Image (cartoon, rainbow, N blue to C red; front, side):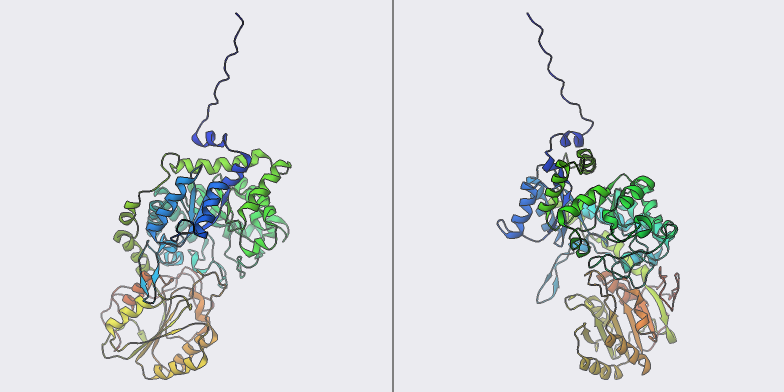
Length: 578
């Protein structure tokens, strides 16, 4: 009887991630590195949006999605449905810079407008900077991570670790903790710790630093003309500290850095010198590298879509965020491997990182979330109280001529409340005005936007002359990424006219703190840092001395104020006659 061949031993894998990698085709491996965008809206079966994302998950087998805008329960239901159809569990991300409410605050029912509620929305990160409190930063990160995971989101794209050292920055601004690298580092590390203690993957952005630019990278590629020594001193310390803390993700910035690349031809997202040489090798980061959105005009107009995808992987990126054509990106990657331009080992390294992240999230055991638990974990009172504390403690008063604040709230006073806001920002000023009206039954209100004609301002000045007090609220933020972080000349002139005519007035910035240069003679200038409901509520309470004003500006306000400036106002014991 002849010898029989022993069966070949079955392969032994160290982990679920290794075993899954061994089963994937080249096309499926490429798909694992794609993270297309999707809405969190209600999408009926057969609708165009539902068909689009189902095709990417089921046919293209993308590795994850970035979800944006929706109510918490709908988001959880939608993600559960996608997870059930995916061959490999999806890694889900969302931009949650100011908590889960940044994207999942819910909806506004028109023509009310009635807010339908949602996840917890915090003030901006610069509000945290104004508190200077690491404990609050960690709590904000923890709440963000808890609510994200409850909805089925594993990667909150937060925190922003950029040092906002350019007052004219149109894209970072209040998204940063501030201007001082040490404070950004200290608060950023605490925020990272909070997110990851909650079981989510923190993602520092935008590497290697997007704070010193006057160009919106959604529209064009900024050039950061600074030395390597300056990068080591200012931009890089927050990222290095976060890496040392064990941050799980880093997102790239679309910008030119000649000090690292030697020219203005290759943006950092596509640069091996930046992503591999600096981030991987020098700084020791071994987590997930996400590109910033690949559909941003600054990248998409300069590089062919398949080529941009390949170059990002060659540079060292792992996940291609929001490719404008996932099909073109996948085909480009597959073609590069087949032609020998990109080794399959290089591809496998990124795929394995993605799969290991999914394993660490426990997705190989349970990829869905219990929808019935969403209302018990998201937007709950305990989380709202943390957001309110951040807002209350962040309020920063930089000017208070004649001790205008705090106010008495005399019910007979004639008060005019004027809000400058985006034309679609329907909720701007609603909470503030509701609080003002509870004290001033005769309150008159007006809304301005960029299209307000000059004669409206003339009418407002006539009303202001017959008022005891004018409250001007400026809702100028960068959430829309419009590149507009200033107010129109007419609005600035209106505030200056109030000062020239000696009309008592208070200006509250619910966003960009640098606006004062447009109306340098304002009597009172209060920084609330964001237009979130909690910030409006905090500002209203502070006006009447119900809470103390104790914030300190974490950024210079050239040429008027330095880092750390702020007027302390205790809880009211006395006030003006209105």
